Image (cartoon, rainbow, N blue to C red):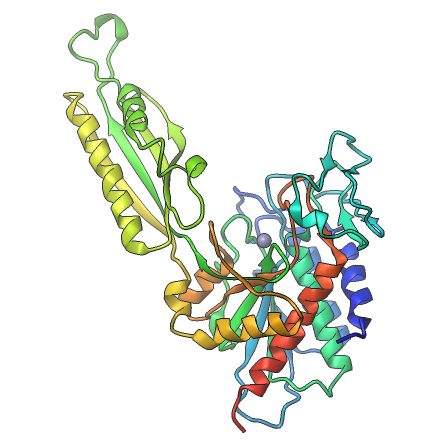
Length: 419
Ligand SMILES: [Zn+2]
């Protein structure tokens, strides 16, 4: 596909979308968590209508769905979907984003003008070193860029525009979904899988060129609550049991050299205390538990319980209780039942001239939840790098490759459907 007509559309759209502040918020009484996300979602709805997509809807929660009708004579081509989230991370401001295009990147450090201490260096960014001669887009130093995931949004829009302009490209029915609040873990909260009506979908929210992700962590959150006994410290001898000290001892006993986020990588899981609410009478410790297989997750939970119980045993008068909440599960458990979903994506990446990189995500995606909600959804690259930070960047070359992969993926599904 040498004609890069979709290229202009993709970058131009992206530069417009990043101007809209869509930062989501952890604590909120509304859905979406910030109402500015609806500004972009409403705009996307209008743009999809203008492009000529069908069944374009925006529901009361802000989800925008649309259909790109089939150009195939085959009746049974499965409906596939492409999904991106419009919100940006609560960790870094996304207001007043000034995107800068560094044309014909020369391989040097990129110093961002609004805060010259923000330097994006190819030394720390091996992928940046590969972009010499290409156009690289960054923010200006005081905000994130928002390529996570507005790059995915722009790529899906550009692919839809291209396919509509080229009815000679044969594909089945395609569904498009734009969602809010992914960054705060609520992107699928009101996602109506049935109304979306696809056999499978792809989130376009991955990092590096060629990446395809079908494995995520399986994740739980445990709250371990230690009960002590509080009394006036002047008269506490032989009576007080300090839950703070019990909890501190528990944390000290957790494995440090292994099973910690700071000491693990690849397929290793971990146990991660991240919040403490401390008082003498009662102290609760919240822990994230992660593993790629659910039995491994349960083993780690057992270990946490065992360490907590042993700790309490050495503090007479103290007691402990546990509350385990399921966060999400490794989508591989679902995707293994739908090998075509991953194989076709891998083939599309190859057809775009890239080497498919099938890597696990040490985290979750909306796709992990959607897969368990009945919509198998691996993740394909959007080209975003250093997301959630002022150092965020993306190359237009990678964006165009993502558009190409989306278009190829639509064709692969059609070709593989028997007449
Ligand atoms: Zn994202």
